[in-house]
Image (tube, rainbow, N blue to C red; front, side):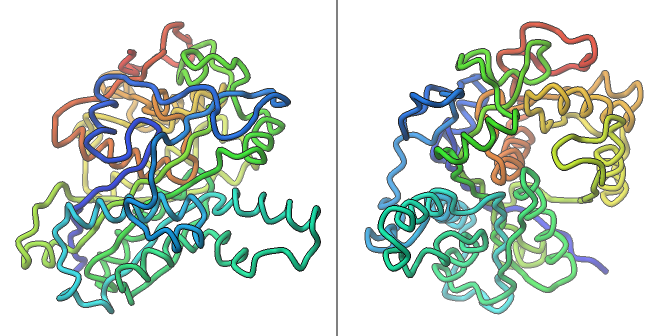
Length: 381
């Protein structure tokens, strides 16, 4: 018999708040974290806006010496993990460390570190590249650093599935807990790709909005959408088997009841025009959970604000829910946070948890011009 799995703690570092309370209040109030890029000079860049994390002090969580040994995505992951563990009330002195695991996804990993070390290589030669370059840059070091910090000696791994990384990390941790491989998992996603190379790469990929208007660039499901706005941050949850949480008297925030993961096997960047993979994933997750379509009362959409994604995602939702799709509120919080890439799904899981707790559906801000191909209830503004 599979274990039931619950969430007992949450942590967030985002463009609209560096803790869950601030983040969620800003979500409810439709606050945007998108602005002109402050982190580097964008004079020669076609895209000049992003959703940057603001006023983040890593030394609030990490010793100064250790900060220098970590890329920003790891700093975000540790900050969010610290918040989540504090809320969970876990006693790290009594927990079974061998059944305590970490699974944090990242789409790219230490991109800022890669850029700075490449600059050293080309300007000063190979001997000047830091001996810590590799362990600082690789994607699994968010999980690694968190495991070291908290003494988690169970499964420690990562998921690198681009924008699905955070969601996949939580889902795979769910499976691990169901099977009893672990009692407790720290799971989620972290990303810090608002860098010159990150912005340039996504721009030449033609994935980003080129409007350079903070109010009209990340506009999911709007007819005038032209690409996403890159963001950064981390979302982390503490997950436990129900038995473990009950035995220690934990405050349970919610239960995870179903998970599925599929692949379009269609194109490197474009989703299947028929929404087949996304639809099948939703259908399998509902079946795994034993939940009927009529029981679904909110969908937090991927909603990237790209022409293809929002259209095909709408098709996928209608494919699964039929006429019921028109009765389900669907919103994209990327309208406020931008696209956090590997952290997006984890942050949006935290949105869903808070939506359940507060019985509140966050809006899709900036949605003004209706698209006849996107005709669901997107909770505009």
